[in-house]
Amino acid sequence: MERLLIVILLGILLLGFSIQPIITICKKTKNMAWSLLLALVVLFIFGYCWILHYFANNTLDNLVLISISLILLGGGIFVFLIMRLSLKSILEIEKSENHQRFQAEHDSLTSLPNRKCFFNLLIQHINNEQPFSLFLFDLSNFKRVNELYGNSLGDELLCIFSKTLNLNLLNIGELHRIGGDEFALILDSANEQDIYDCIDVIKGSVEEPFFISAQKVWLKLKVGVSSYPQDAFYANELFKNADLALLEAKSTQQLFVNYFEGLSERADNFLDMTTKIKNALINHEFELYFQPIFCTRFDEIHGAEVLIRWPQKDGSFITPDQFIKVAERTGMILNITQWVVIETIKNLQRLKSLGFTGTMHVNLSTRDLESESFVEFIEELLKEDPTLSNYIVFEITEGAMMTDLEAARAIMYKLNRRGFEFSVDDFGTGFSSLSLLRELPINQIKIDRSFINNMLTKIADYAIVESTLFLAHRLNCNVVAEGVETKELQEVLKSMNCEFLQGYYFSKPLPLESFIEKYLNKGS
Image 1 (cartoon, rainbow, N blue to C red):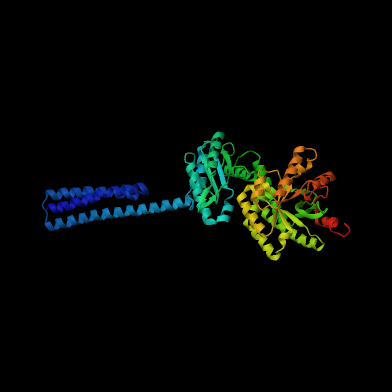
Image 2: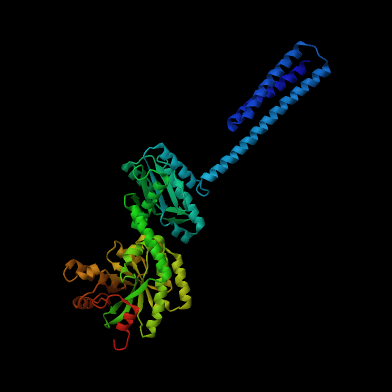
């Protein structure tokens, strides 16, 4: 009898142990059916207790008692197991849902919150109606890193960078990855000093190089900022303004730009010019002009600089200053440079048939010096004409090289190994001229016209020209003096052993037919 009562008591205990799993399930599912089940189990416990009390105080047939006791124990075991298994299944489903939710809201590579998560947070901040600032930034040289070292190393670099920056921003805000090399941050302040303090933290994250697979890699950041409510009241508008500020930072080579009135108008003008450039490439609106470069030793034409012009239907021109920067920002400068090279080759074929033996100087941009595709393009042209490097010299500015010196060095040496020479344009206007001459495969320098124009009236300019000539000759570089506009300048520069001269004294830039008429027709 006592053993059978213990069996019933065990059934009661099993029902009791089922209550906590049911309570947990009720909290997680918010389903009324589980609450009803909880009430039913409690009712069973009271029923079991009543039966236990009844059996303890009444005499029953052993067979009946055994049957009822086993049924009650089986019921307790059944409920206990079902509740435990149900809880396990629900927890596994919850874990799976949490994992799926995490994947939906986080970047798979860096585990940072993603674009979707960022916009949800942005809308929450706007709904709170408290001032805050939106930071957008990207790694301006990340594409180049991928080209040099491969995507796997690039991915590793992104992970290390994001971890470093997120750690530095721990007490400021949570970092989000919203694109390939684009990140976003919300700062709970629109105070100018707080914004600058945050910029300092971001800047500090890339001041030292990153070491990836024994490679030392420097990263460059550009940041755009807009603030709520002074810059915008709505999420999309605020994001757009921060993006405009980021574009401005890229185009002006600044670390960071805070949104200001007028950027929207600039953006509209930018988009308008972008469309015009695309159409100009499609419709062949660009033309090449040629400005001769003269040799002082033989008093004859040595070559010409190739200059791009964009004539309009009304007879006016859109100047390179108006469209080259836009083309560089959009990447269309690569298409323009390739067009210039191809057209130069076509024109060279005609010029050589008329007796021209000089070189053509083609200008390269910052983007060209960062692009492996430009090297591949040149290699394809060399397959068609292996002597191409004998007729084309690439001109580059100090600024173009210094934007990403490592990338420029790599591209220049690849082209130099294929026979191409380089001329540094506007020499003396930058800040790293001497180091450039030492580190890069430079064969020629062009002294900027600002020094040439005033060298006969300003002792300092004369001294700069004289020193530049001395330095260049010691480094086995020849020199082109730009902006020669008088015979007196020609004679002085010739007496200083300046090898080549270029300027309006000899000729302004000419279209091909005028260039041929003036310099290559018989008797000219």
